[in-house]
Structures are given as C-alpha cells and as structure tokens.
Length: 288
Ligand SMILES: Cc1cc2nc3c(=O)[nH]c(=O)nc-3n(C[C@H](O)[C@H](O)[C@H](O)COP(=O)(O)OP(=O)(O)OC[C@H]3O[C@@H](n4cnc5c(N)ncnc54)[C@H](O)[C@@H]3O)c2cc1C
Image (cartoon, rainbow, N blue to C red; front, side, top):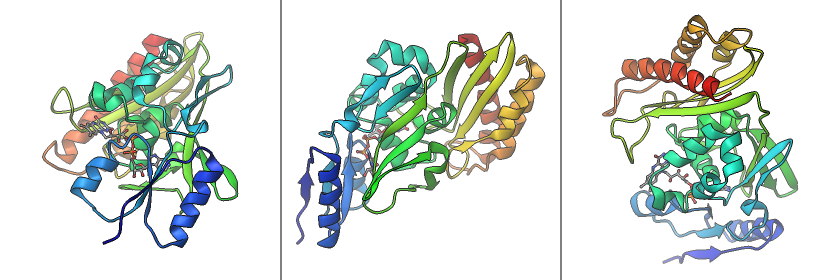
C-alpha cells in the first residue's frame, strides 16, 4: 500500500520543487491550507495516497496587509484573523462578513477564503464577495508568478484554473476609498452551518449621490459564482433608486441557471437571488 506524505516547505521555491519532485515520482499532490475541506473530503470522497503540501509556513501566504492602494490576503490567513482586523473589516465589511459565515467559530480558526475559492464549490460563500471586491489571484508557477481575476478562477463545479504545480499564494484587492463599500448576503434554510441557496456580493462607489461604479456577483445559482455585468450597468449613473435596484435584480435572475435540490427549486433560487441583490445593494449603499 502507498503511504501518505506531508511536507511543510518554508519558501515558495521549496514548495514548487517539492510539488515537482512528488509529481515526477508519480505521486498525487494536494495543497493543504486550513484543511477544513481536505480532511472532510479525504474521509468521505477519496482515500488515495498523496503528498500534502502544507502552505502555512510560507511568509507570502501568511500576509494580511492593508495598504493605501492594495489589500493582500495570503492563502494561509484564516477567516477568523480577517475578522479580528478592524481596519480590514472597516474597508471590506462584505468580504469580512462572507468569511464570517463560513462554518462555525472553530472552522473559521482554520478555514481560509483562498481554500474556499480553490475548493470551487458553487455555494462557496466568500467567492461572490471576492468577485464584487475586484479580487485578483496571485499565483506561484514553476516560472514565477501570474495573476487571474477571481471571476475567471473557478472553471466548473469543484474545478479551478490552477495548472499542475501551481499554488495560489493570495489575493490582491484594490483598497476601497471612503465612497466605496461592499456587502454580501446569502440565504440558507437553516440559520447556521448550512449551504447557501443563493448568495449575492455587491460593491458600490457613490459620488454626490450618484453610483459611479458597481460590481455585482451571484453565488449558488449556477455551476460557478458569476460576475453580473448587466446588474452593475443597471446601477451605474443612477441614484440607486427602487427602479435601478429592480433592474439589477432582474439582471441577476436572468444570469442565474440554478439547480433544483432539497434546499430549493430552481425557480425559488431565482426569486431569492433577486431579493438578495436588492438587499445587498441597499446595505452597501447604507455603508457609504
Ligand atoms: C462544518 C463545516 C461548515 C462549513 N460551512 C461552510 C459555509 O457555511 N460556507 C462555505 O462556503 N464553506 C463552508 N465550509 C467549507 C470550508 O470550510 C471552506 O471551503 C474553507 O474556506 C476551505 O478553506 P481551507 O483553508 O480549510 O481549505 P483546505 O481544506 O485546506 O483546501 C480546500 C481545497 O483547496 C485546495 N487549496 C487550498 N489552498 C490552496 C492554495 N493556496 N493553492 C492551491 N490549492 C489550494 C486544497 O488542495 C483543497 O482541494 C464548511 C466546512 C465545514 C467542515
């Protein structure tokens, strides 16, 4: 029987070369961040022997930095740390709330939003909030680094755009200015520890009462979270009045292609995503 392996590299180059060496030896490799998906999936889905590459000892992945122009969230930063950072929470309350919805206090002590993204569940709570915030993935490759907007990172249910041997190091987000705020709302049948039936992330910029920029993303209503450009267009140039909110909600419903399952029918999900869209816009607006 093949054995399990564990490596905790202390530099990105060591991590990449460990991955290369394991691949050359024909071993399965899996990156380990908080492990809240990995451990559950190893028990329930697949027991194949593998080498786990723990990224928690890399300095890059432990960065949580708020700069004047850019916020960096390292791939090993757990949700709980994001929510303990008052400056981060004040700038990106929607993304902080999305991270705070993941599981329980215990889960948030380990779970990372980058792990949430890499796991690529259609219902991953932090993904619409990251897309709304304009987050870009900082990816370590065999030859250096590459960047990819979060909206292009998830390519299917449980599938992401990382190539073999690549690691997501973290996320870069443009630092919101005083007249920009975000919000994330989801609906779950139970109040705690449940999977979203629908989720909406919104980021708005308002100047003298007029919306000058917007990003709207929906989750759990399609195979991947989606950036809904038509919803943003319905808001930009308006005073965020009821008609604009209704048009944005219509755009979210039109973009959704949900499934029917035990948590709700496709029609129900479409209705809910429209309602959440309006509420998330109103919430982000109220924060500016
Ligand atoms: C009880 C419970 C409740 C939960 N509730 C919610 C919830 O309400 N909402 C929600 O969205 N999720 C929920 N989850 C799912 C889970 O906690 C999240 O998906 C979590 O954010 C994953 O982060 P992690 O750091 O633990 O990732 P890990 O488990 O370490 O990794 C997840 C996947 O991503 C890969 N990966 C991780 N980091 C990287 C990287 N840097 N580069 C490349 N690949 C990487 C791993 O190989 C693995 O395939 C829950 C889980 C549990 C156990």
